[in-house]
Image 1 (cartoon, rainbow, N blue to C red):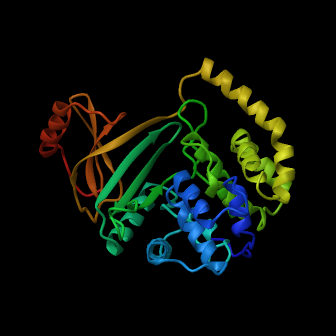
Image 2: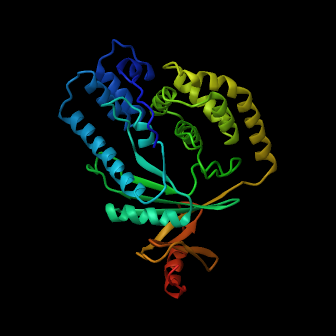
Image 3: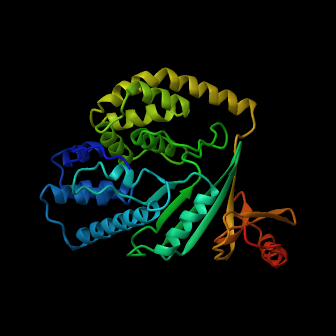
Length: 353
């Protein structure tokens, strides 16, 4: 992760602007607005209020304690993994390190990018050695090259109030959009740009929210190294529409320094990229195919270094170092299809890989 300096611009006035509230409104209105916008946002509000000298009650103090414990757990796992593996952290702790001292960036999961499949399974094993997990989800993305994602999750400190903890380990930094944007496996060298692009790519899954805006404000104060290089990188990764929208979203609350110039320079590229996507949608087939692994059974195969693909009854079964999966393209799977996949497992050849 980067060692650039911390930003120091996250305070209560910024949060009031971010949530379209009057600075005269009671702090409880800010808490309620944050929670209604996105559950984890309230953790950020609590930490900023505490830093500003407000006394937290038992409920808010414990919610903030649990969130900090989660973040500390992710940092410990990242330290364990990075001791022997070259991994890149995307978002999460990579951005949180630039937040002001005492301000908590809500972190739902830990996103790790590895160089290939062998590294992916090796990292997964390290996580399993250090953390008891409840589920291991697995997916395969086929395009010009095959990429994989493993998601390990476990129960939080308070299972009735908090989201599960998760670590995502993927062989690509940006998985794009099935229709018009390909997988781009390697992130930029500049951590600020790596994370800016990762936030922008979230637009393919959801609308931008308040944490995205604050992340951008923070990143604008620690980089990028060069606006010209940033523009070239965004063009290369084909994310000009998302980046310009993201910067406009954040810029309504605070000045963005070099990112203001970046947004202006990217506007022509954003229009060109929208036109390219429109033409691609009309004229070409999807660039990638995503299949999700339905777990059939858990396994521990310490001598395996890659997944082995088998075909049975028209379905694809993947035997991996940590479990066996039926690859599917939707959440709904006919029971007889699942049962047939289970029945096929004992008849598949198996051995160290």
